[in-house]
Image (cartoon, rainbow, N blue to C red; front, side, top):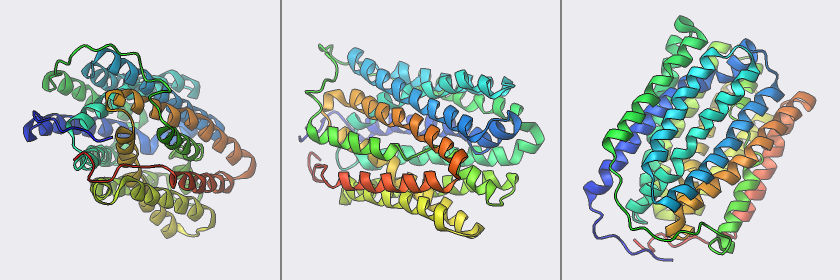
Length: 394
């Protein structure tokens, strides 16, 4: 399934949109992560939701991600348009944070969470552009760079959250978080020029375009996602283990810093040794986090587990998507990415909801143990996925 390199793809033609997307991602994640480290505390202590409600809200948000990305991927390929989905996605994120700021009961968060996660319509079209502009030897690095900027923006957002929470309070801080994504909207509108493409008859991605290899990859990621519950559970676990509420954002900062410094190296490593090898590392990292939460003792251990969680994310996020773009038909990349994210997101709702219910009934250890088992099963299935050699199509 070799690709013919595009002779018109010069370095500047690739670097400019990549840099714009990277900066927009930095800004959007800055806004998101002003909220994320204090989100579970806001939901539980300010709006008085229990763990099951927290799992419902977070899981529902991820399910919406799945549907929005699938729809955006299909429509993007269908109409050969990418840009509109990207800036509209950032706009959704900005507006949702204003909604969080005015919510007075946890049920009010549901429509704004849906709007927030619907903003993920930007991902599949943007990733398809990056995949099209990259060669096999640079694709992992380019996705790694994008993820690095995501995490760097998150790092900045967490610092803002820590610095200004006491000064501004939850609601004003949430309103402030809307600003960076609004700037990202303008950046995409003004700085990205969408190239005209030839109109082709597009019938949509069908089962005939999804071969057994890609189906197996999607199935194993569904298995893994059924145990990959929301990060909120890690933060609540840390708080229940004796960490003060003021230190919880610091733990999130530690995780984000680890993900930020490792995403690009893991992306580059996957260009050299293959995508599957790095994914095995990612699965091993998450299984270790789950087992560490079950059997580990002491605050120092929990801090180390948040570092490991960051390395897991640094390895998983860029390489997951990179492999999808390489084992699907090139003409259907946005659709395949959208379908892939749909599967992950649809599994996220039962994952977080079940984790919350199990937590309420049996305690924190049961959902972590179950997740570790599902991770091992996913890694076993990954053994049978075929990837292209690292030098193919370069």
